[in-house]
Image (tube, rainbow, N blue to C red; front, side, top):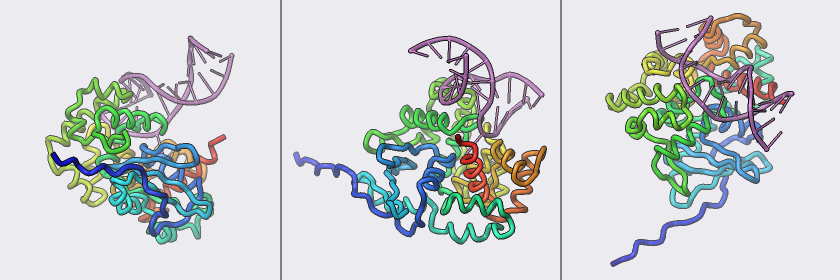
Length: 297
DNA sequence: TGACAGGGGGTGT
DNA sequence: ACACCCCCTGTC
């Protein structure tokens, strides 16, 4: 009986991410662990380990600001191809320049504080799952829920890490099983959403391709998806820069920096799209990052 | 070191 | 407006 070839073992050496701007440690942390994605963890030696889809990678920052990556040898080819797209860094300069920083001193200050910050391009379905977990939860808690979902309901990927469960895998889980992943009242939303998605093949892919307004309406028909979650999914999981998610942070930030006291979330969202233009979602990330940094002790 | 409030990046009614 | 869940964090 022929023995199968030995599996490729170990990780690749660290190599620079292709066509990527230089970063600061603060910008890198904000990009991958600032609330857009929930599957990154900081390791010893200022290395980050993260997962999305069937990718597993480590990132670190060189002293000259270049971002380097390393992946398990067996999956390194697909990680090398997918990573620059996922990180979304190649168009950031032009997009930032399209923002009204010349006439908006506060925006200019936010841009200067997190140079190179951009929007991740994550898998659409995974982004929906992450933000269905997010209601009234802080990042650390969302990460915990997502880690448990992967551990208990996802399939093995590499090095003991699992993929996030697919919507089919989620549909196969009972609501109490989901609840046991610390989801609380979100378990019912995820359970019902999974049933719907499995009963409507192609629905998610079609939604991803729809124009922004139509895609948002469709997402909001799902249980547990309101305007804020829909905008996050479209911005972080479909690259729709028109999406301007309004959460309590942005409400506070806009009240403080733009004197929008007592505006409703819809009014703030409208102001955002008018003032920041078709890259409003990118502006939102900078405002968000800046306000969080100010709040930190 | 352990208990105890308080509050949390929203949605649905 | 308030319930929904319940874990994290700060504090005593």
